[in-house]
Length: 288
View 1 (cartoon, rainbow, N blue to C red):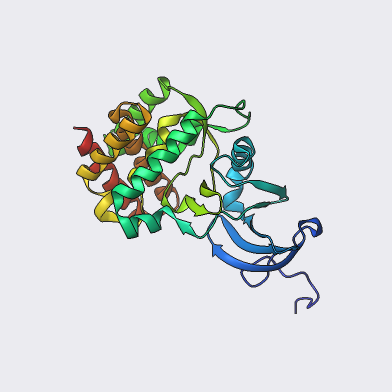
View 2 (cartoon, helix red, strand yellow):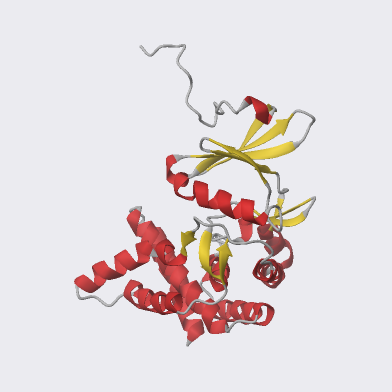
């Protein structure tokens, strides 16, 4: 029989022992994802914050995500209050997401707000970029590996085509800067300080890539994700707002969808990989 006095593991029922100097007096589990437990915490004095306690699957972006938040220093992103062991103590961004805007006001309204946020990110170079962010080419390593596997088998696939596209994009990057890296509807939240980004990956690369996930989201709205006309409208909006060619946004969107498919195949999830490739086909049609 296990020792009944042994320390309980961190789980939805057993929050971790937070550092005493974080002054946490109550906790509530907000989310349990493959990468982390997310806790809403109340601190002495009544302030509400969030603790993101990373699981092993989420540790790859633990350091780079923190670097991005530190670089932003609260500008259009949540403030990183402290970090300890595998946990980030961060500002509470609010309870309303960009997905709520889409549900209430439609896709165009949500995309307009997203484009405004991307314009603010692209226009802000007030501090030097931090070292240690993931290079964008490294971010695509799963797609490149899948493409090599397919080519070695003599197959021309969506992965081989996407790898050629992204290799050309990466060889001709413009406006290289720190990127959020996972910008989608549920990572943009509204609260007392307005719209803020949460949960960055922390990448260094072409600013165009930060819009790529918008073509792929929302995840449960296949009617939007699989619509070539929607992809074309989104690319045109981004082009007008950010001053880049619409085709660049579409090519990065296509590459990101195929990258997501390669991740799903690595995880053994063929059904989700197929859904990702459906998005890639829609974006590819918008390119034609």
